[in-house]
Length: 248
Image (cartoon, rainbow, N blue to C red; front, side, top):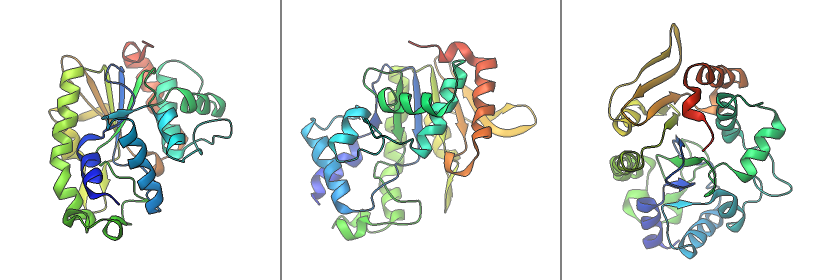
């Protein structure tokens, strides 16, 4: 693996969509990274597209060899399903599987859509415990997951905060509360510029804070919760913040 390109990717690539999108989803990291060829294909496509901070998801994934989530034979991606569910319900739309798949294939993280889809950590990994990059790279800070996080976490927080302050999206939704060895609440609070509080009285399912331009929400990771958890959040957002989720 080309370590120079890999370093540039970690420093510059943030995710999918466009800066003027009104709704930004920010997760912990992408799933994947099972094989070195998969990551090399991502780096090759990203390099060929000019090493941009944001890519077009419906174009980027098939170009890098991943045809599972876009195109005629696409299947619903488990994490994205719940993000889309929340968004559709917040807009007063149905959250059927067909509606979710259609949105996933053509709009989520698209350069002509209403969303940005970004990650706190840039490299895809099978899960929060497995780590393959020590076998694929000679970079000292990639020889362990902790070394990787310690090297880039603060820099990524600062860059995400800078982009939010510059582009002023109406809504930012963080998802995922922790890694195995650390809470991510300090990271989300740093990016959002302050502390969160409970959004729904007497229920610890959603946190929020707000500044002059952007409202921030923090919810649990989709792999840990049911459809009903996300339906409740979507219904709450429709009832209380529908104007924030209006189509562009």
